[in-house]
Structure formats: C-alpha cells, structure tokens
Length: 170
Image 1: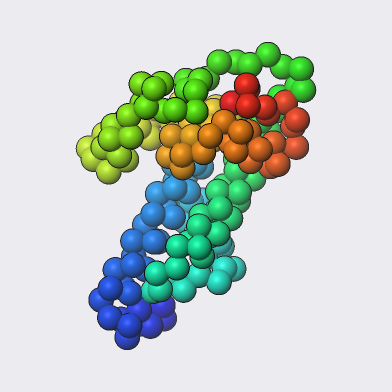
Image 2: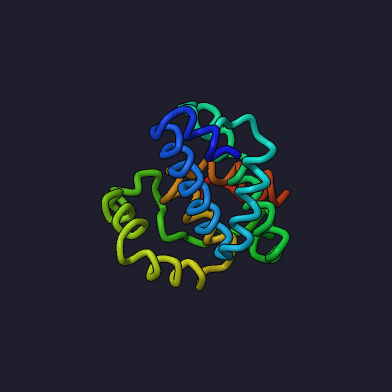
C-alpha cells in the first residue's frame, strides 16, 4: 500500500521510501547481525511510527532511526546479557576507538563509507560477527551512527541498566 501511495506522489516519493527502508535495514543488520531479526525490527519500528515513507521528513526519520537503534540494542542485550554487564567499578577495557574524533583515531569516514557500500561490506560484517554484542554495539554507535562516547555510553547504559557504561568504558 505504501508503495502505491508513494507512486501517486511521484517517483521521488517511491525512491525516498525505498532509500529509507534500505538505510534502516542496513543499520539494523549491522547492529544485530541477523538479517531476519533486522527485518523484524525495521517492520516493528516503521509500523508503530508516524513516518510517512514518501515524505521528506528528516525529523521523523531520525526518530525512527533512534527507535530502531534502541530496539536493536534491547534485542542484543537480551541475546547476550553477559556482554553488556559491566561492573560500576570496572576498569576501561580500551576500545578500538579511544577518542570522539574517529578521523584522528585512524578511521576515516571515507573508509567506512567504502566498507558499508562497496565490495568490503561482507568483510566488515564478518569482522563484526566476531565481536561480542556490546563491542559490536559500540562500534556501530560510534563509527556508523557518529555518536560520541558520552551518547554511546548513555544509550547502552539505558538499555543494559549497567551503570558501568561510562565515557571511559566506551
């Protein structure tokens, strides 16, 4: 039905709807690593949102992306709670990105874009599949979504309930 509605609004609306759906699926898939679950999460978030898939509404898209991210983190935490369990007094593990500036950490935006859209996509997914769920979440939050350490820590802390998720720990 949405595709028909979008076609009535013209090809730009249909293209926007397809692009939005693909972007949301890619994000969910990177986070959870399970394409079937990623699809379910996207369907749940879009169907329960006020997003008009044909309209250019950056605010609505951001809200759906945020809801999808939170739903994916909740699913990940339930699947691997031990990965998200951090003692309040835990020493920082030292992540792969220890600064809010990903470029300065040796992870240029162009390289990530190439890995996400190019022939290295499977290599990235294989690497992500080897990470514990919490590390996977941190990487996607930081490198893909561009969250800083503070925001990433807050999002994981909110979902996991573990106060050990601090700026230093992320």
